[in-house]
Length: 101
Picture (spheres, rainbow, N blue to C red):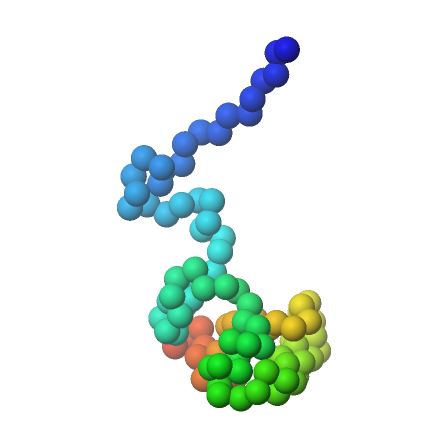
């Protein structure tokens, strides 16, 4: 059987660990706002409840409101989770200018 395997050229980061990895460079980095790099793009109700010291059902209510605002602005949303960036911006006033981006 002559199966030809697809080969990929090594990335620059494979040779030099100090360079950016092209495989993950499209993922958002949430660093200056207090989040560790690689934090999930979306935040869920249990994390919001813990963060704001509120009940999980109330956190879901907040998510519905934030998602409703995003939908009205033309964004697609996922029920039960909201963009971490939008949540932080609405609750903590963290904007792109504050983050230096």
